[in-house]
Length: 135
Image (cartoon, rainbow, N blue to C red; front, side, top):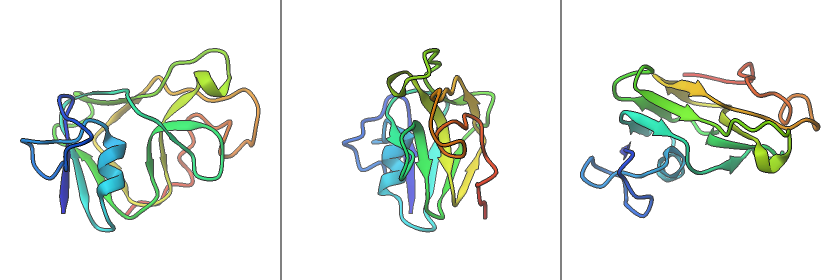
């Protein structure tokens, strides 16, 4: 199944067509099952948060299932933006993406931030991608 995300969408929508897309990428990910695709159209996606599973820091997008999250027109027009916090506190820190399984393709990631203390691998790592698995 394919789910759709657009800046003018609404997370109350089913997100199964462009006429009624989801608003946040995470809402579409939550609706998707293994093997599904989330298509994201042009825009800056800087709303919503999801905490890293088992840890403390928030992310705009968390992908832990084998799904594909793909932009329609590529990274020059499709952005996932964190919260460019400066205090290092949990309230002031939002990273862009946490991914352990699946595919993320065609996005620019910008303004992610993390906390000043905590576990090095999953709390302090603002740009870490080495745990990522893609298919």
